[in-house]
Image 1 (cartoon, rainbow, N blue to C red):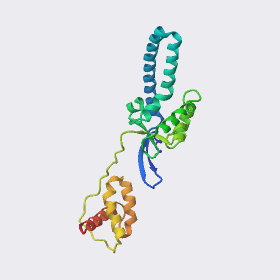
Image 2: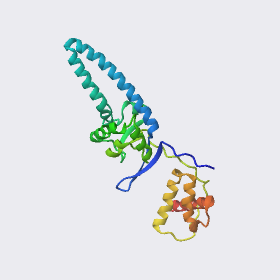
Image 3: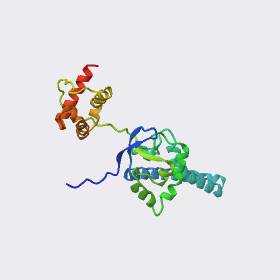
Image 4: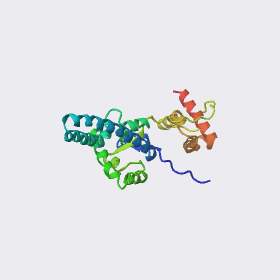
Length: 239
């Protein structure tokens, strides 16, 4: 059996400085390209509308004034379109919102105006050579799919919809079983915590952890898991 190729968009765990682990579903370059294409179409529509307005201004106030207003509008549209949206409450441009994405700090919190400004000012570098050659290379080279602007600003592009933890089925409930050896209070707490959290893990993870208690359960695999849960039930009933 051959290993499946790595996914471009993955769920990744990020450990904060305080030791707290958060899980973010980071968006890869594929879906981000669609978001950027949508934003380009929106900007094109705004540019066409601006050109029509400035043509009227040019007739009324002179061609030079009309061209000046058009150039100023193009400058603001090119450099600040992404910044203003990303630094807002939604943390995303219309294109990103359409694709269910948003930009966040590496800690998962909304980004500041300064971070948005920095990541978008470096967009010109990421766009080289040709069309986002450097940006694509850095995305594929980074485990967090960050282009250079993201690395400099400590930002990530993630899926806005929160990750839903899958719940795995637990073995059928057994009668409560008393432990075969005395347990310290910390060991009892660990067994109860295992029972409460086991449904959030895959079956393989459940079995891996329950095997560490084989000295207590005198079993491994599914049987050991079932016995460990039965011991947890006995401890819980005695609380």
